[in-house]
Image (cartoon, rainbow, N blue to C red; front, side, top):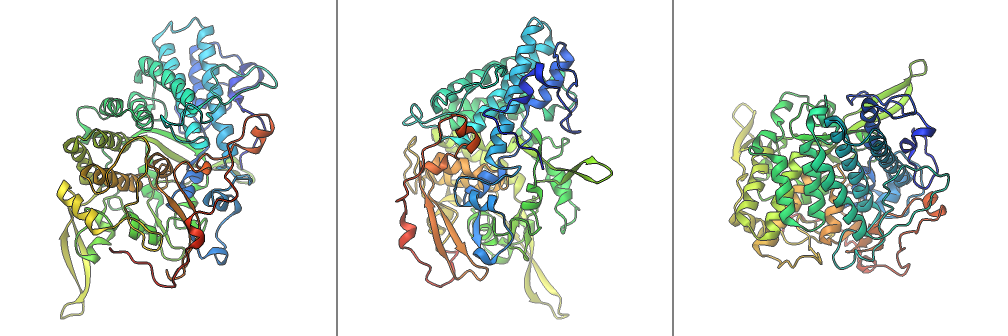
Length: 579
């Protein structure tokens, strides 16, 4: 396990006079320099390797979202206390590589490295060479990205109505040089303002020419995709369209994921497909981040994490089968060949998965064979730029352009037709297979038909569409605009499965979600909690060590909170999947 250090803002990489920078991993194109004085161009380049976080927030936000149920309760021993706290929206008190404490520590360490790089560039005379100019841009982008993600994890989502008073996070711009620095949280609005300043300046300075392996750095496509995410959350659709278009270029199809590269890979082993998904050779991957994590076991066919996970009930009723592109035939709808990205189902542990998290082991001691579990996170990708732009078009009411981007995704992700088993026999007792076309070219009419087929979600009757309650846009239920956004939220839920992004969509759109206890027979439901828009628990509580050092805690939830789950009880019947 990685060692946890108890500090307010652990910025180890930011204090050049007090430390040496050690190698992060073999995936990046440069190893940090071992000397303590960052006084050359090459040393700045090496230091910036540590300006990318090596901790993952995915487990925290994925389990907090509606991509998890409590399967079989205490009868299911495949869980740990950390995962249970994430699922139940409790303050996390357990130590784990993916814990909020590690996220806070590691992201501020990355910020510290970026700040030291900026200080060192100033010490070298400023942007006196093209490389130093590009490194300044990279450092600013890294600083902006880390602060932005911290704000969206530990704060409420951005809101014109509330962000001027909602607590933000400390925005640090100087290397930490004192023993006991003091920080204040400011506001979410101020945090976003400062992220935008760093983002804009960083984009004006960046250059791909200085990188041998640009996909492990803030290259131009990654920066523009980050900008599109930032402005989507900042509720500025015109800027989303601008930067998504810059990221995708003149030929968006050229940067769509090549699922054909996975053809022929085994269907009983997720690792080859996961390695391809997170490959530096994949054009769709704009920014890759190697991290310390065991997510590769949690979101795969292993027993690890089986109690709180994405199960077949969620996969069938809310994600993969209840879609506007599904064939009419039930057997065709459920075939794994309908998606070019092959999904996996573990019958033993009831996990419904996509192969996204490759497993690596970094051996530190060859004699004892001890070391660290690693994976590679696809932090920014072409699909996000595309879907961000589609959502911006929907917000602006440009249905035609929204559909154009939606269909670019469906054509790439959904097969044109599927061959499926009818479970009927021919005269020789061989199964008869049939072929069905998918509806991967969506229209307003086909989306309206999907909305008519599937009612809004209820815990006892799960559906892909959920009531949206955003305060930043007025949506009329059943309108074409709302139907398009519902479609996009479904697509995003599939596209970002196991990536932790669904939680942010829930916060942005005010989607009410529930905690369900469900058994493998699907006939003993119990609601144990619910969460609505701006529930205080949507801002993950700051780590205890940070609060103990003097930083203001997030507001707690009123202990009298019960929600409507307290009066609801399962009726002992099976969950329905149709309208």
